[in-house]
Length: 293
Image 1 (tube, rainbow, N blue to C red):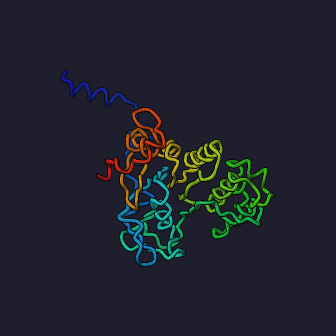
Image 2: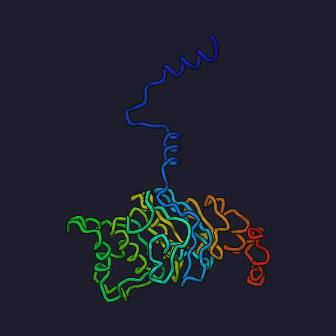
Image 3: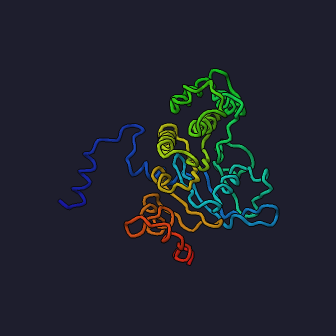
């Protein structure tokens, strides 16, 4: 009997797949074939009609994933997020070129994409719970549904439940950051733009907040575009990353590959040739950047 006929007999002997079942390769192929939830295509952003801040920035966020937007202070991370969330006009900025497509349509209005801004921006005079409830204001819906979502937020942020009646302006910075993320969740977003969540927080709190972000992504299916200077923590939880510098994407790739990239390790993690660099060595890094050569 030939090899081909023997193989045919083996295939015929296999039990038929269960209804609705699919193989792992099929599921992976379907995921990769699905359209991304966000596609930023070669955008330029200008402030006050003269100041060019972003220069041909392109990036993609697949559905249900965490993507990191990395770079130093002033690289253009926050401007990129504000372009996506339509907040540029409040700062006399505008997208002059390119396009931004969210969930299949160009961005012109709110469509389930929420930004948690740098600095948290809680309503200081309201209680923690009142801050959370403001997140459901534009959503509408019955009171029972809002209460269910509030309990869901408390399940991820038990510390907020303990502090629910405290005035938001008097809770800790970490609790305010949790409150800001929880408020965004109350709007039932498809995607959250998270701007510098680690800023001004103790390392232990940073780890706790990033772990919650990872749980929200895994369990609730919320996509995240994470703008962050803490490169090590961002790449720990993201699947893919983009490095911004002076308003341009200068490097992108799988998060693990970026974490192992010698340029990223040297210029953003302060590690060169397996050892941590001193400040004196780090001062001159701009002369040696290979990706801008």
